[in-house]
Image (cartoon, rainbow, N blue to C red; front, side, top):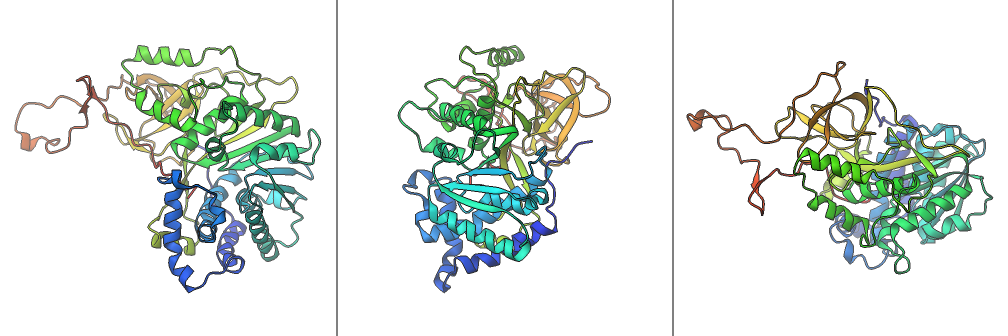
Length: 491
């Protein structure tokens, strides 16, 4: 039975989302002209954060117009996706007085989501340290939090402290001894770390490892790291590389200056010639690397294993992402989104939950047996020659393709049997979810040859041929559609 990843928020969280829209008018009121301009401001900010990101010369917090658009559009949409995800995450044993450090807090997006959606945390005396380089947006976030607490749960004993610091500085400036930190959280932080480079030659993979090592020193036993990014190709690759660093993987090659460029290069250069090449590629990516570091954390979610991430295989064009349902979004948010031309019925995300390894603990060994745990890690898409729509899934044996899985909840944790059949486009093996592991026929995405006869009676007549000619003159399958690639900071 597949286990869903997302859930509908409880009544408390739903009331909080509704109340937030009204509180924003008190915290940052608008005049008539600003109200009329708001949909256009949301659309302009969306473009700056996606297709026109290179034109973002300074932080958008410096513009009142964009600050208002972020608070009224991006903040609520981020809370919609997080309040659907966070209740289902297993956080283990929570200390009596947890200390949480949130990097790049902005208007306290992740702290607000935790407070709204986790009653087990809301009732505890949490010390929440929020950090950012823009102090005024932290103050706006603290004001929002206090208004929500006063309205919904005035007895909640949270203590929110702010710190002006970058993501790289916050852990060093945290006033806490070794082992006192319980949770390090970061929402939409890694993509900014990638774009704002440190000194020349200091690659993102190096900074990721340094951040993880500092976190391991501060975190206590059962300490956690939670990171979330938009469900774009860039966000999925950032999560995969953070996971690789946490498990002790080696850094990328020197010529991989940015993970976005690396992702794009992998997307267009990976072409599978035959199954033998695919197997050799998988074997090479799993060989031990000379400069690997010892593991510091083990993945808890969404990964169903601690083996190598199949998304980092040089031949893979997939990335790990899920579409969170958005049916509980406030009506005011849906109306604003429609007026801005940014309507949506789901919100894509990539995330990673890590637990610090205990002293003497190693990574879990691969499971033995015929059954495989698999996490659905894409939207549903059509695969030629397969019935229905399929989804990619992550397993300890590599990337899997699950046919006829569109009906399953996004991000669901499933069990199934691997087969010998492979998708020739991605190299993923077909995963059978039936009770009996009957062998499946070998998958070839080439369509059957058109039979001779009357073309008008041929049901495929008039359809565009699904293959195009490659530069080498051979036939090439079109890329699979794997969901949205629009990065709207979670919107």
